[in-house]
Image (cartoon, rainbow, N blue to C red):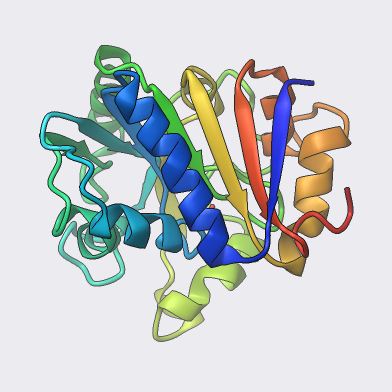
Length: 234
Ligand code: GLP
């Protein structure tokens, strides 16, 4: 396929390489940046924060948000983005689903946001079960923004951010696979042994809704930035 794989020594180098790709897109006129949460993009955001790249006329659109958490909740993805990026690197506008909003109106609103601001570069992490955004295995490829029931695997994987497993929200709003695929360029980051199987299935497995990230094989411009452990099953 068209996937370009860049192997890096560690998460720090991965952040630097991802930053270079973002800078190139910025220099060639990208205006809308699709952003992700999770521990994976943290090094990218730390490089971005310290950089002199100006985003004050750029737009950020995040992938997802937990349902039930207010934007100012310490574990909300909105808070994550403020702390890791937006407080130090202001954008003209930032969008993230509202975890307290009612489903029908929020889905409609977020789809309008994405349609009115076509994403130039989308940053992605990946779940151990190959979810992207919060699109869990089985999500139809043609899905736009939707309400998602998180799988046990995802709740388990994300519980370290909460006081206890019971505090992890069970639902989220997520940009759909179709929305993600509409981005002009996609940069997927993965580090660590626990991502190796998902990465191998992404790159060379069958394209199936059981492996949400496998659809990326059909995208014309995907770059995977992997450390050795994440690339170990390729
Ligand atoms: C969450 C996020 C995903 C992220 C995944 C992996 O489920 N919704 O966008 O890719 O976690 O997180 P981490 O990068 O911490 O491994």
